[in-house]
Image (tube, rainbow, N blue to C red; front, top):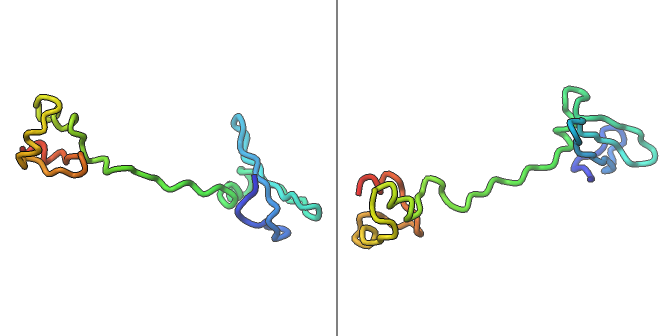
Length: 107
């Protein structure tokens, strides 16, 4: 796979990264004809692995993990599963079908 940084010797975007396999270090090498630079993730205290590493995808959360589903809320409050009476009565504040733990305990 191609790297996101230039070669430290020839300044061209020709560095290819070979991922680690079976505990072997990540191998980085310049693929241009005029350059023979090559390094692995153990060289120079691991700097090349961090320079040419792929950016990690941002962590995505679909919802706030501190919110409970209605089923989890009824279990926590020891109520009959599926009852929405306490939600409709205003005992719990509805947040897109999810409820805060402290609101459930206070109801």
